Each structure stands twice: as C-alpha cells, then as structure tokens.
Image (cartoon, rainbow, N blue to C red; front, side, top):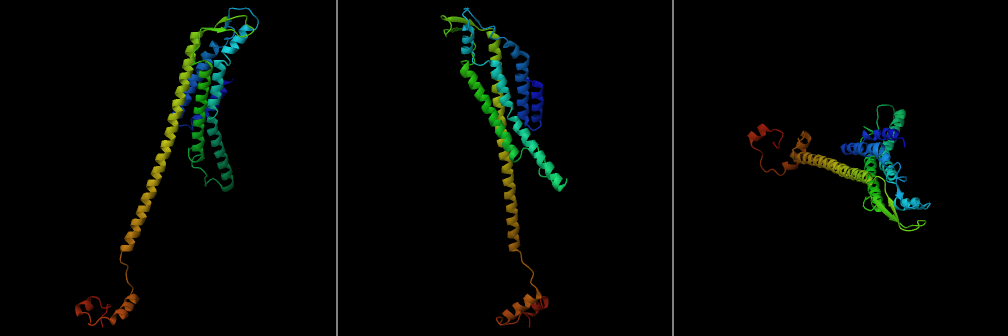
Length: 277
C-alpha cells in the first residue's frame, strides 16, 4: 500500500473538519499509520516462520498457525485503517459536488449570484453527510475491535499454544514468535482505536449541540420579530387619526339635531369648525 498517496488524499479532509476531526486525523496518522508502517509491519513480517511447533509432520505447523491466527493482526489493522478513513471521503465528494454545481450556475447566470456562500461550510446536506461519516467511522472502529477481541480472546497473545488438529500426530506444542512485543503493539493499537472512537463521539455531540444552539437562536430571533411586529400593530391601533374637514362637516350635520343648545362662545372661538351655528 502507498501510504503517501493515502496521506495526501486524507489531508484534503482536514480543511473541512472541526477541531475534533483534526485531532482524530492527527491520531490516525501519528499513532496508527506511522506506528503501523515503521514498527508493526516489521514485527509481524515473518510471523509464520517464527511460529515453531515441536513436530516435523508436514502441514501440521501450517494448520495450527491457521487455526490460532485466522487473520494476521497486521492485515486486520490495514483493513481497519482503510475502512475507517473511507467515510471521510464522503465529505470531500460532497464538497466537490457543490463546487461543480456552483461552477455550472456561474456559467449560466454569471459570477454575481451564488448558490452557496461557502461550499465547504457544514450547512444543509453537507452537515448530514459529515454526521453520517462520523457514525460510519465509529461503527467500523467498534466492529473491528469486536472482531479482534473475538478472534484473539480479549486481545491476549499467548507464548505457547497447543494444537491437536489433523495432520498433527498428537498434541503439539507451538511457540509464538515475539509474543511480548506483539502484545505491546496490540494493546497500543487497540488503545489508539478506542481514542479515535471517543473523539468521534465527542465530535458527534459537538455537531448536534452546535446545530441545536443555532436553531435556538433562529427561533429566538423569530419570536423577537413577531413580538416587535405585534407591539407596532398595537400602538397603531391605539393612536388617534386626524379628521378631515369633510368628515367634520358630516359629523356636524349628524349631531346638529341632537344638540339642544349651541356651544359656548369661547369654545366656538377656539374651534369654529365644530358644531357652532
């Protein structure tokens, strides 16, 4: 596997990630990929040759090794790293899809109108894609940890195993090469995987909490706008509108018959247009 190409592909994910995502990416490269490439591959490079059984029966060593190590740690970790990092490319592909839509929209309508303010901003469908990728990564990590735990009995690597499978003539003792070193690397890789699971869960809660807070702010702003609009409508309904001269004349004719006595002179002097004869 070309790990440099793998690293170049994943580095594009870094600019679309949150702080937890950047920490996760650093843990994957420093504590998993680098340890895998630099040290772990060498420890497990000749594991079948170092698996020594006290018999010369042809095929017995191979059968016993396949029984106790159905899949090598190193190959299982390689598959785990590939499957864990693949969901991150969903985000890159979604951003690339947005960029392509933006390019076609600009070609049709010009440069000024925009479909997205920022194609890499986690809003709308991209937010759901990012959240889905986190759930997939967490599920893959847990699945591989369960497989490793199920195959190798709580991640334990014994120094000696006993095998009585055909074509072995009887109960055969087989010795595992570098058992302590392999055990240390196994626990280290399991711990790094558990740390990645914790970071994924923290990022999931962070994204959901940030989304809930943003929705709460929007609802609060809407309530304030509705409240301001209602207060304006209420103030307008209580205010006194000016009366035109024509309306005053109609009111004068309507109420002139009901007034038994004319208004006093000082009131007529201050308001001559009101019911004064």
